[in-house]
Image (tube, rainbow, N blue to C red; front, side, top):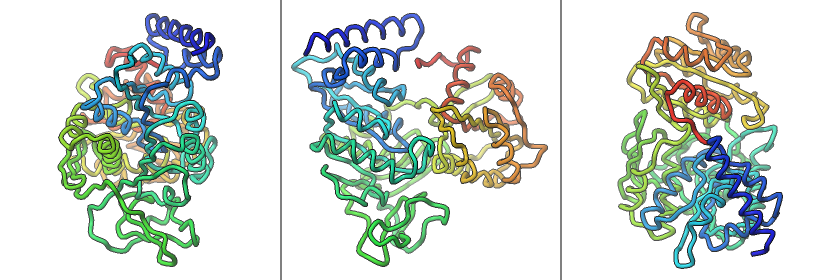
Length: 450
């Protein structure tokens, strides 16, 4: 390693120690300092690590967490970025924190969530063993553009690490649309008998990449995912190496299912989270873990920031869900069908850069489904509360059930006055940060490192 590289690492670690000690921060700034001193610092930091990268639109954080806990059952010394700092400077900070753990005799993994647009910046320096592609959905149009633009960024990033094996969601047509330099292995669902159906008419990514006709499905799990085929040419879902073979039971807080005939259980809800578990299973199997070890990893995983995170506020149970695009929002709304108790809803919409400044996606959210439930109160807040209020009114939420609050502190007061014990919160990224900070200030949760 060069003197410049050593200096960058030492300065970065000193900055990280200071920030964590005195401010409870330190996720990104140390990485910014280190890369400023040595643009190649990430290459030095990641040497001799077996790296697994998780990227895609939705599911990165939970898939990373599940993968981390799964691999820990066989490889106990693993580095990860649990706070979701998934851009270049955050990845550098993650390695700075774990840099001293490495010894020459150990096999040390790094399981990293990486922002799909930042992948090309990361793989310029890191050569992962495996890249997991979760899905590609329309997200942050101001930053990413359409889904094909996002996927091209992922392809370009993977191409810089041509020896990396890609474990891809085979149920997503886009992952089978182009020839890659990387070896690609697919996972997906084989849980239902073949039929013949179309995806919902308002679904992106359902055109055949070969002949541009609309794809059909033997079964459709959600959005554009499923066992797809083109009736006009030979394009179809590839053979799956790892597959969900049965979905036993889905509730509002857990999932039971089988993968390759083996039973599994997770304490997270929703079909979309079964995909995340399947991705983590695929990584585990790739590195030689048994089904029993993988289940132990699933059981060890904790609730993640804003992903069905449950917080108690006095006598109320707050279920916090991060939302950032219509597919993710609609999957969260679908979860409400499994709820057997009355509940209220709080929706918080911000448009800061980390959220995406284009909030038009709320019009593709299935807020009309709120009418299917006995919801006594729907509370709206956030920077773009006016647009969200209009969306709720168009969805048919009556004025007497609709509450509009300007400040996060007002939202917490509303929690305490809610007419139900359970409150489902759907909030964009910076809104989740604001809400958790205020909850920490009031002593309801421990302050989270930023």
